[in-house]
Image (cartoon, rainbow, N blue to C red; front, top):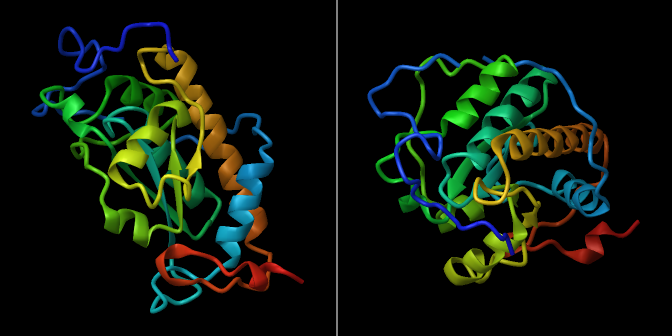
Length: 229
């Protein structure tokens, strides 16, 4: 557990990186890469997800697949992962698209649509939002059902929230370990987000060539028999 006292919402606007809702911001996306984190768990998950048909069986095999990044307020970490992933996927011609959601979005109420830390890091990496910034969105059951891959940013923080709000899904998503602003600075956490996302993008690229597809069962389960040679 983090030893620093959690601050949600912050003591004053801006302390959590808030932007005023009426402000106009220009932020851009650089394709620079950092060293990947080699995770057998992530690799095996990506291999499985990329080899199976989409949850919506009406989608063609060439349709865009979806990864959902989850954090607490959908204000800081998950928003960075969403925007960084989409920039990297587009640059590499990857047939995946990211979105992001929060488990306690009310924690960011009154502090604008997105953390300034996120905006500044994206700008430094070359990504410009050009004022096109939405407010945080709460995670829903449909988000989980329609996703091909779901990643929560910090297991210690988010597994309990998932078990409380979406108990059937708590053990079926991937968890990373990226601290919120109460446990680490943005200069520590956002580069780690970037590194994790870069590793995920490379694994999805590798998994594009893998076959045959697995059999997708109702409620997102995969038939283990179909994964055997």
